[in-house]
Amino acid sequence: MPPLTTTFAALGDPVRFAIAERLLKQGAMPAGKLRDVADISAPAISRHLRVMRKAGIVTQEVNGTRRIYAIDPSAVARIDAWLKLHRDFWAAGLDRLAQVQTLDKDQDGRS
Amino acid sequence: MPPLTTTFAALGDPVRFAIAERLLKQGAMPAGKLRDVADISAPAISRHLRVMRKAGIVTQEVNGTRRIYAIDPSAVARIDAWLKLHRDFWAAGLDRLAQVQTLDKDQDGRS
DNA sequence: GGTCAGAGTAACCTTACCGTTAATTAACCC
DNA sequence: GGGTTAATTAACGGTAAGGTTACTCTGACC
Image (cartoon, rainbow over all chains, first blue to last red; front, side):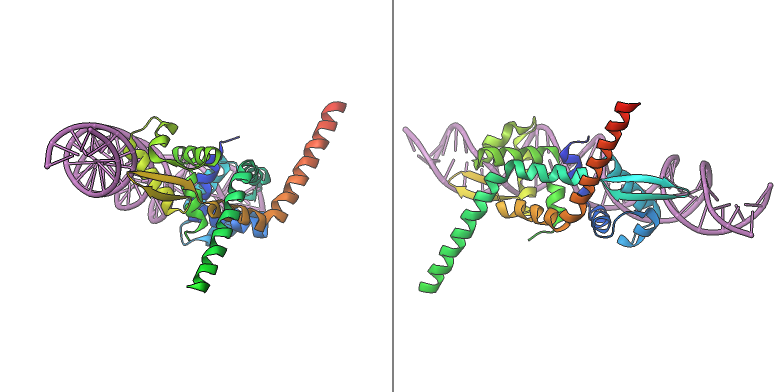
């Protein structure tokens, strides 16, 4: 299983992120159906898919001349687990932020 | 607010990921205290911090000659929100995966 | 068997990323 | 003011990422 930074790096490219979203929304599909996520050539898409496969984000299933790609749920789950690991910290920070913003609003109202 | 791909790209570098984890675990600290996350020069760290700031992952607070860096909780919250957006999809996929693995185990036991 | 379509690989080019050292800015302190 | 420390900016170089076109490979279909 590749490290989390590899997963993040893979999702850090706009084209690959678009591919991920497409697969998440519409489910598995062959490489050809992913052509229009960006205005780039087919080989470019193919290489992005290769990167995503190596990063463990997508799985590939061969079906005749088609290669069917799908999101690997465990990759997403690993991101989720990482967030959960630190949730106590950043969730508390969020609350604090919200409070500060509320205070700011009050002050704005008074001044 | 920068797009999510920018956030992912920022976390896709091992040094920056290490910085994020440090700040998540130990809270805010000046740039100097982050030197030892990797065996690189101070300017290198400084530029990574700049990237993270632009990506909205960390905030910077000037305090005399020190710059205090901290995780911006809302950045993490945005990742969490994205996962939640698609959770129905990948969580279902996870369940299916778990089932398949259970079946595989049964088969192993019998054969 | 010949042809066609779907995907991927090879070779190449350009640009962006990440590191380095040297120089700069700004606050502290005597 | 002079010196020191914290941090960033500037300038430069090597490597890797991402795009392109040309080609190869492998099933499908007649």
